[in-house]
Image (cartoon, rainbow, N blue to C red):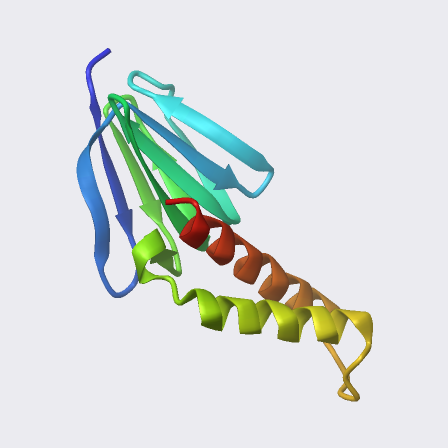
Length: 134
């Protein structure tokens, strides 16, 4: 099957622009996969691991929400943040996870926004997972 163009961009930079054979993205309703010739659609994205592959080589990004536009010859992902494994500060991500877990367990004295604390925990866990999966 012929490769198709995959582009991933944040407000600050173009992260990826290259031909690929497959993209697996964290849709807001669950992960979805795209191969060349896929039917066009639009999807909102959640926090998660975005994988793309060309041949036997595979890459992964930690992304934070956004949108995907899928066409038969091109997939475009626009996201708030996208990080390659080598760009993630694992110590900082671990500290963020610990803070979020403390907030969710009620061990802090501050009023918490549960949804915000849960989102922070999810982002931290995904970043750690991507960073350690080299």
